Image 1 (cartoon, rainbow, N blue to C red):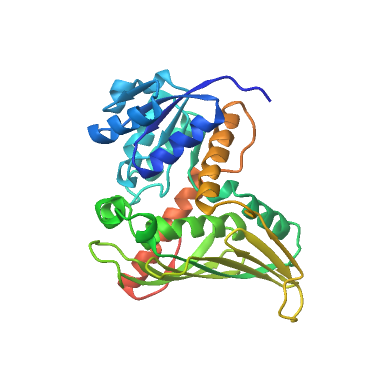
Image 2: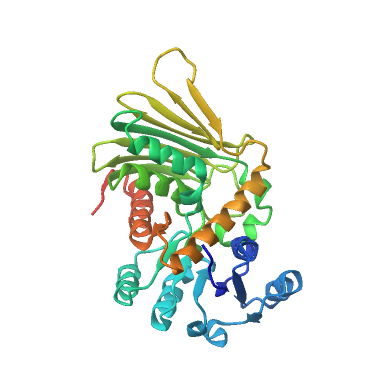
Length: 338
């Protein structure tokens, strides 16, 4: 399908903003304007990518003059930026998490819905081929009725973000930490596959990473409306990079190990089917390629094409789950979700 060139406003030019800039550039379908208050970051982006324009604030960029916004500012700024897009009638994709508290979240979602705006949330795994395939096999009943999931998403985070102590990650009020930042990806996968969570219990702490005020480790147990359950483990200091998710049904198991999807329906100890969706690809390049896929999906959605991306309501459930998980450990009890 042929799509017209779109004017895209990238709000925030930090690490995640840079990934979106590259992604939209690679589509060949977008003219970019950058909003970044930090002059050094703004100048670096202009030097490297030569966008159509670069502005210090949103008002200077004139939101109503664009076709799409991509909100990449720290999560504590998401609510006012979403409100500004709603007031300008500007469709948007907002990075995860949706916010860091529930203050103003439901009100801004209602504003977006009243304006009938396209609005999605940047849970990048929604467009990952291996997860799309996993969800399809579960929906088609390959493992019977889904009852249980075990997830472990752990890595040496400072290796990938050496500057983590100077970023939003180090500060809970900006959305950092293992639960609001890292676990929200796993929460999104679970919500998209297992449905609405109803009960959560958690433990978390900062066990190893110095120079932050956030947790680097969490253990989270979740029960869903269907009766199915899940356990999630995350730590952000171990040397081995682990990304495992096993979904257990009444007729078999499906397991993701990074991008390798495997199936078994007996006790032989062997997977009867296995496919690596990233075979021959460099992991970080494959990760960046997903941002291009996400950009293509958003640009297609502007043209009326159905998309698989997370909605504001999906992300609202996710935020409620994350905040309840934090509350659970503070109050030393399981939390029932509304």
